[in-house]
Length: 314
Image (cartoon, rainbow, N blue to C red):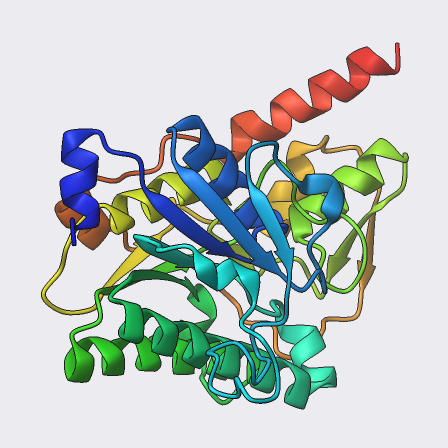
């Protein structure tokens, strides 16, 4: 079997499975893979993903990866899902129930979905000799026992290390830091901070800030995240490697809000449980092994957004 990095070096087309392919990061990843000329299949249960995000050229399947039929173990009780019929070179496991607050409200849903789906993907990869790139989270740095979400993401990392160590499954972990950009979620339980701020600004509503707004976040553009994910998939590592994908610079939420206009109205609300004070990536390992570093910044992004909105409203 030709390895992923051999295919990259020879310019051959890869067959990629993207879990959570209708979600925020998954959609942007699929756009990149299609642009690079690869064959892409998506699996998503659409709990947070949107069919409006579908990209032409990608084959989408509505499927729950925490289902008992995912591995075909229970073939006497159901047929193999059609997405398994492709011989993949790499699986990008982006699917997860994200965000801390929803996990506090419904721990079983978050823990079961995130742990079991990751286990199923790794077992499928083990049986079929497929590389796996796992979407980690910066939340693992802020108390594994502070939220079910943080624990679920850390347990996924541990599963990747286990399968790498015991079964020689080629795995890599990419930890994301406060992602923003195209296709981000603006409404509902799983909305991102930047998605909320953009929606509120667009609707001429106050920007809602939790607590005193002094908590600091390392905001990373989704295109930089995707570039790191792709680079991690193109290299072979003897053991599971962890790459922190963040800008390495953070801002307080107050500073981010001021970038929309120092005089723009703000509304402070009660701090949510489980929130931590700071996120800050150290991307030196990604730079060393993947030759990756972030190229975009939140300051220019917000400035361009504000200028565009002002132009549209003139």
